[in-house]
Image (cartoon, rainbow, N blue to C red; front, top):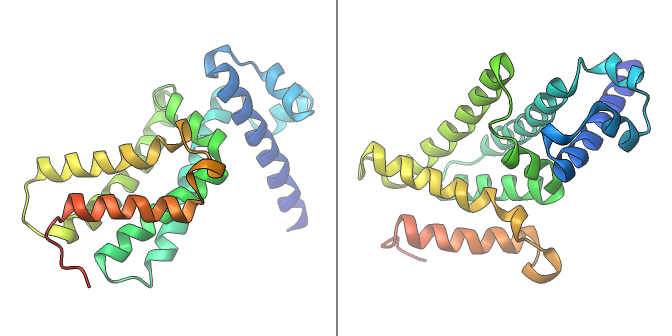
Length: 198
């Protein structure tokens, strides 16, 4: 167990360092040597964990989506009200990505970089996340809209929460919790303007 934990910590250190390099230079201009310098790990040491730069990018993306999805499903287990479910999605997403802004930038900027099986795997995780959120949004209005409208609303939702890394500054914009409250206020009035307020 300790050996596995040590292995995971080293792999995570590589992913964190690689995310910083990809964020600063972009995937195509970054090299394994850049990552080696950033992490302080030898090239041979990095190749012990990953086959190359593409697998590292894949692993950064997979790690982020897996963390967000697993934590979200765990939090949703005890939530029944659809509005509380949506708020859980918002808070879960913001809490993770305000703590991992560099990784969020890489996910956004390198969304179309992966190819082949790596791309397929990440696309499946994205669809899993999208479907989960879309099902919650569907609960808010039932059958009172068509599939096209539901898609527009769901994609608009992701557009709002995914681009915070471009402008969010906690010292100016408040805590992630305050940000979540603002977003929920927008969502409540926009998705269901006639929702009774207690």
